Length: 302
Ligand SMILES: NC(=O)c1ccc[n+]([C@@H]2O[C@H](COP(=O)([O-])OP(=O)(O)OC[C@H]3O[C@@H](n4cnc5c(N)ncnc54)[C@H](OP(=O)(O)O)[C@@H]3O)[C@@H](O)[C@H]2O)c1
Image (cartoon, rainbow, N blue to C red; front, side, top):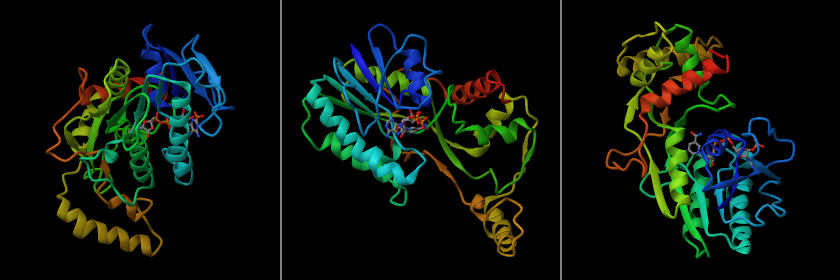
């Protein structure tokens, strides 16, 4: 089966290409000017983007749609919604059999999405394009939480690892009260391949909800760090330390580079009632973290 992969040069795309076997022969959609040096040797490429697909779908049997504007808010509507619509239209015209979309946990119908997040709004809109229309092919969507693992060349998770590896003392409110739900990129890739094998519909890829202490403790073990987290209760942080930091920020002296640091961060947590994990054998959240640390070491940045 020939599979067009959009977003092939990104974190998930590079991991997917590395895992695709003979059953799924990838064709990587690569934007003009984007680097192809990290693609596995011998992978077929086709130049184009979601605005101008050209003949990218000629002769393909399936599409895995990973490409998205993840950080650039101004590009989200055009890329994540209009771009997805164009790709769906082109896929229908090309007569493909399977369309697999990489969504996000916040766009799953059983998870409350954040209306303030342009990213989540764009993924919810894409979800409507997928499931509220009749398509002449199978449609599958994958909903991962916070993905970790190797080949994240944009280093999007580095700031979680670097302070621990540097053996710093972690002082709340900087790091201690965030909440996470972490999955291994290989679980996401395995689920995408499961969809290509004829399993349409919605597929969650989740782990247990985790505290920052669990996440940072695991990173500390993996980096042989001697990191300590000061056990300041949340209430002391929220009603004592945070107002003090806010006041210092107001007078132009911010010890943490901005009072926003003191808010509780949510990195992909799921409602407790949502116990579904992934339709494939999953790696542990600990291995997602330790493999990320190992990869940072491998590329020489730890
Ligand atoms: N990483 C996570 O934790 C996470 C969690 C949940 C869901 N997801 C979803 O997983 C997918 C992949 O994420 P990722 O982490 O791999 O992102 P990434 O590393 O930022 O990669 C994004 C990819 O999309 C491509 N792209 C962006 N705009 C495009 C356009 N207009 N036309 C064609 N290609 C375009 C990029 O190409 P260039 O290389 O040329 O820039 C790159 O290949 C996304 O849909 C994201 O929403 C990710």
